[in-house]
Length: 406
View: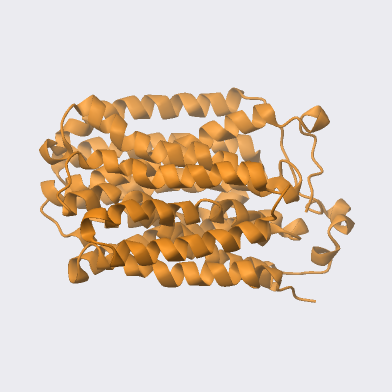
């Protein structure tokens, strides 16, 4: 799948990548808010860990419901306008967190998280295929790695921003203290929506996506259904598991640090993003010049497997630091999985990307299971859930992505 769109002349993708990079930062920031809210809700509402992790589940469950409708909206109004629409949804969801805090209502918190998840769904459905087909498919993982840096650096920025504006330790924060920082975040997200409308982002299409250019992608030309692409379907399962374990890596650090009674728990939110950014930097340097996307996926899967084993077997006091190794393994999985799964989809590109967006619901399922495992087996043993997920992703990198239907 190669790009056949009218992007900037001379393959100059700098401006579109800067704009999309800002969008990826917004996605990471919105998700990073959850890592601050989980221990706060756990304390303020006197609920179990499993119940507090339902906030993440509510956010990611929106991907299951709105993943396909998002692709239809993109088809009608284009990538850029869908990005702007997503920020309006974000603003509505973020606003609902304020009355949720005043009422101390978990159901309202879940509703607010779900609506924020809608915004996340539409934004992810826009920016991921956009950056994948913005240039040659062979270097898609490199572009996705750059976007990943923008995204993952934003995860720890969110709890740090909330801590700085509120001016209290997480253990001392009251629910109503989140009002001011959330108003600030809402204003910024609305500005991003306006920026998306005004920005001169070119519309892009994959090779063979138009009916009159179907011959550009012969593998997809004679297919009649998105279900006839086994490498895509296997890739969806890999992405489902990946998003789940990545969310565990990024979203549980503050809670885990609290469980271990470590001081300044919010500062531990940086452990996983540092590992991921190191991986993303390697991706921008080595892909595709020295290694291809499939090799990157295999190497990262092995690193993540080793990291997940060390997290549960190392002494508790230092186990939290091995989450950075798990996160390092996660780093190039997203950049590699998207182009590997979307290769040769042709006219089914938007439908295929919608399936991949739906697969992001793994971020709802795996962390929720993690939360209940924490209640049953303790915080450290809960990380065992990551091992089988990484083993399947290794399988996809070894052979799953190669499977084609004649």
